[in-house]
Length: 390
Image (spheres, rainbow, N blue to C red):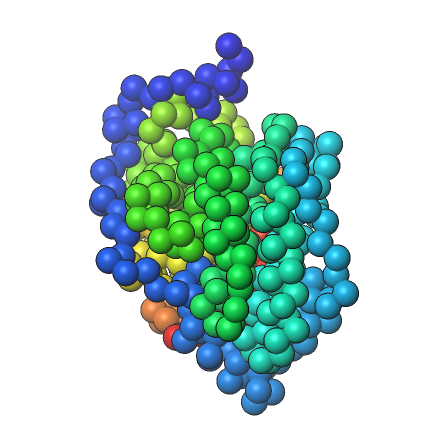
């Protein structure tokens, strides 16, 4: 068995000894809120009012989305029965098409709600219907991650359309697709790299909301909590980062290896910081997105350990993304930047709602506005979450 396989698959015997605190039992809401995946109706109404008034940055963000290829009314869906994605999407048989059609459906759903133009609702439906009539599975090594990425975008679109548009005859078939093709692939996690499981849990939580599946929601939130605690370090964790139950990280050397060779731990450091900021950004985005969906569903975790890890991660990585030279103890003094358009949701929650000063995160967030899409699962966060207290 390879060392990497040992790290990610062996049953852990000592996570509690390494400081893993018991997490509160997740609780699905008695009644799910709809639309309620990443954006709620009050949030959408806030955005609609700002765009109608021509207020910034929302008008520029809306115009950006509207002008993108994702919003094209001539877009032709490209569904495949089997989407095959290898490492770094090689091979790429439907991987890009699936992710981008899912983002397009979400883009169209947002534009429909903001503009009232039914053509965009109908285009979102056409995209979702094409895939729900076709896809049966994901295969190859990146299948769990691909399922997580596309599975994060689909329920955002579906929630808006199902609960704000007049008619979607095939919504039941779409729900069946989400359960059988996506939820079944992501709900049990992958015992793999942090950003993988965080994206997978974002998909699982969003899909569970759409399906009103309390059991899956609880299971996904429990795994999310454990993965967040093991993805971002806080000094209160002790000498070593926390580990995920089942990770097989038994020794300090194994943990340091899993953290890309980083042996000095400080508040906000991520498990993937020394890999690169791009993958770290995927993890941070998923942490914030799930927290936002949980808030809409009645459990606000921004004031808890989850929120503190998110705040520290945003501040730590924003500082270096803005150009601060890394010290020699951090990733050998060399960082691979490229955090991406991933800060708006967390910044809005922690700064706008809770009033926490986040100087570096604020500077980076405002500099990147309007934030677009990473073409994977992050899209139009300035439009949906800038200054949005609803």
